[in-house]
Image (cartoon, rainbow, N blue to C red; front, top):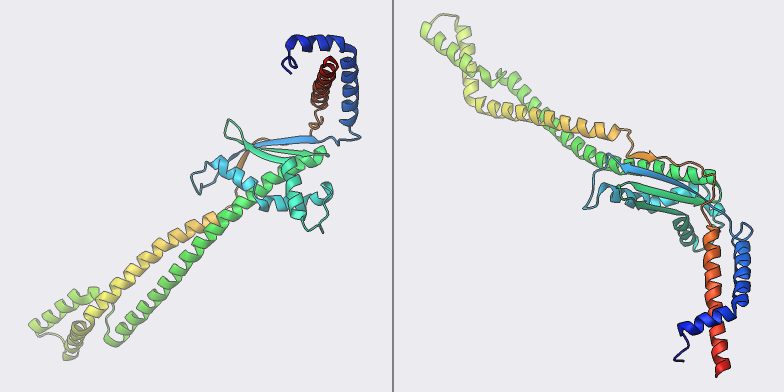
Length: 315
């Protein structure tokens, strides 16, 4: 077989069998044109959308676009698409089949694809027999993406709201305890505020020095002074705790309001730079490519057969 693939021999064979090659080529063109037609291969239309991520906080080293693609390819969105467009009927998959999910995901992944462009946009491509449905599916994927991201954000904000809310509840309970204890001091000892100490001391000393005023007034001042001597330290600590608790409540309230604002936001998480639309020309199959590939394959196979036959004749 030293000269089996000899170039000169191959060229001579092609010239010798030129009519056979023409016949094989014609048959291949005709058959591939027939079998790639709509009778055998259902034509599909393509809708495309491109979008930029926005208002997204990254969860890892991924870029915002990569994170967007992760969500677009999530099974949550795929399952919602199955239900929204009754894709089991479109893809002719029996819902009672034990491998229903496997078949559906395989069909969906064949007809729906996502990727990142060189300009960092996320691209969605949908193939379907109905151009209107292909466009609607593209729109729905974008809508479901926004809803999914919103759910993730709201879940996180709700978690922080609950934590901050519980902290506020604890601080309000502490404040109520301090208020109750301060009220008891006011009722039992007449101590309104620890800031009265200087005033009471000054009044008491003046009353003693001057000897003026009724005995009853002097006695009241003396009693209040004694009360401060016994309970003043306690009143001072309670007031400090009360005031610090109010400061903490004010700080927590600001944080709580911030999380509440984020939780109640209704925003989108994508900028659509190319909206999908119903295509007016099929994208699949590419008949000329099928015809060309089939014809070249047939001619190459014919060449191998003729080479073998010619080689055996010489032997």
